[in-house]
Length: 291
Image (tube, rainbow, N blue to C red):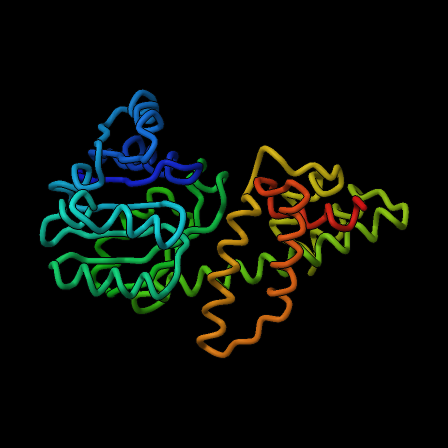
C-alpha cells in the first residue's frame, strides 16, 4: 500500500482518485480548489482531504494531479503551499493534465533538483474511460521510474506506455488530439451527407463502423450527431480548444504543418459562439446541420 495524494477532482480526477483507493487499496489524500468537492469525494470513497497541495503531498510516495492547464499545474506545484514544498526526496510527481511539453520538461528539471521523480502522463478515454478505469496513458520520463510507477497507473489504465523522455507523453497527447479533431470533422461531414441523402443513419453506421471507416467516435457519438444534441456528456469544446492551442503552438516550434487542425480549431470557435462551450467535441456537426 502506497501513500498517495491526488490533486484535482474534475470529471477525470474524481473517479481516478477513487480507483486508487477502492481498486488499488492505497492510502489516498485529495486536494481540490473547491473544498466541497473534496469533501464529497471523501464521503463517497473514504480517504482524506487536505486544505492545500502541500498538506496533501506531505509524506506521500506519489503525488498525482489532473487539473486544467499549464498555469493550473504551476499553481498547485509551486510556492509555499504547493505540492513540491510538501514532497519528500525520493517521492514521485505524476502529471495527468493535458499540458505543454515545455511545462513537462520544466517540472522534470525542478523535480530533479529537489530529488523528486517526475512523469508526464496525460490520458485519453474521456470521462467514461476514467469512470470505468479504461484510460490510455501516455508517459514521458525515465525508464526505471516509469517501471516503478506503472503498477499505480495501471489501476485505471487500459494501456499505459512510456513514449520517451520527459515531455514525450504530452507530445503523444498532442498527436491524439490532432487525430481526433480531424476524425470528428470528417465524421460530421459524412453523417450530415448521409442525412441530406435521406439515408437511415443507424443502418449506415451499422455497416461502415465495421469497415475501414470505423472508429470509437463513430460508434459512441453518431446518435448524438444524428440528434444534433451535444450537452451533458463527453469532452467539452472549451477543453479541446485549449488542447489544440497547445498543438498549434508546438507545431510552430517543430515545423510541423497543421492546416486542417488550424481550420477545425476555428470551427470549434464558431461552436463556442453558438453557446457550445461545454458541448461535446462531436458538436462540429452543429455547424453543418443547423444554419
